[in-house]
Image 1 (cartoon, one colour):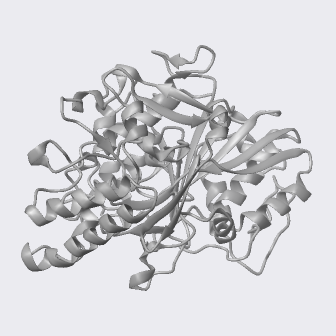
Image 2 (spheres, one colour):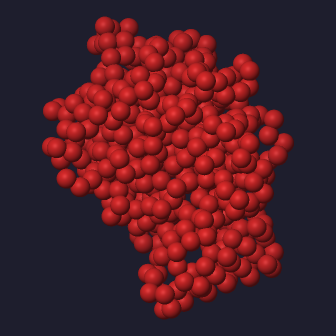
Image 3 (cartoon, one colour):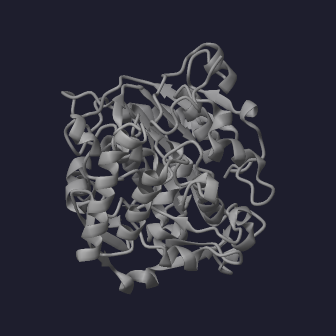
Length: 501
């Protein structure tokens, strides 16, 4: 297996910006290495794209074009447990209020999952386990999400085609919620399942420690402070991973290519956030505005501060009269804000860390990746050396990407591209460039190259080799040739992270 830290290659392929619409998303062409059903009536660019990515990464290159080609054999062995981690954030596009209903730009498409499943099954050679799992947002209805992605039909197909390989589909949330008109009215916590999870403590190695002055308080929207305060102190910085994922033999990360209101973009690095059982282990911001030591939202007037005070109080209640009172007061403040402060009606979008001044979330994103890659599974601690217990591959679904108020309310972008790499930082760097964003202005990317301990890469952005895309060999070529698709950032990042020649 090639060294993740020194792996500076990213495969980038282009195809038609559409998806097959009928699950289980059979391939539209015959490929000699696979004996799976063919559906010649419906084009499947994702299947074709996955295959091309493996070819350009030189996986089992000598056997390409033959029945014996087995591209994932480098990382997947018979008997392994393999995790497929798609981006399954929600069962609907939250931009429905402005006419958006598209889910192709919201979640990793089922045709991408299906193609990876087939090649994983071939590498397993009839024995092993595959788990498709994620932690969507707390209000997501899991059954509806499975319908959106077509996972029920994919499961039935796989079970009948590969009966000796176990396939599981897992909702890894320990906490769910019932949400009515934007308000959490009930929380459902499965504390009994905690035994199936493992806390991984970065301690002082965490990138968050430099923020921990006397008045710091980390938060995440719509969650109480209690669990966060216990997980993150100057001495302990804990993340909560499902044991399935932590102790798997292989993790194949399947992110979606989208802008992100709180992190600039979401790709391979950010997608690993979804392996945390409780979201309130994940610092998204520091409470307040910069003038009082926070980065949750920009400085504003008294009404702005009052609105966020009421919102914070709302989050501390699971239901009841006080919750409804604070929720109502928040709405009243939001209504009068444009009148008394000159702020736009949608100003609240940039709260909760959803703006370019957020100096917290990028640290959490890097922390999660470092905790995963450097966790010593045998001794239950962080090691100084990257773990060799788990193999890793990232495949980015960008045939149709998402822009603007993503990740929950994305607007579709017909990108027509897919990417893959063994290194998440390399993949995210190329993804950002192809979105027309400046690699040096997205903090989890730019700062990821300068980690003093537990590094994710031993190369720089200019060292990345791009393969598979005609005339583009490096990130500089993307910018110079203007080969990127200009994704529009969210309102809180607009004007701050775009590439400017």
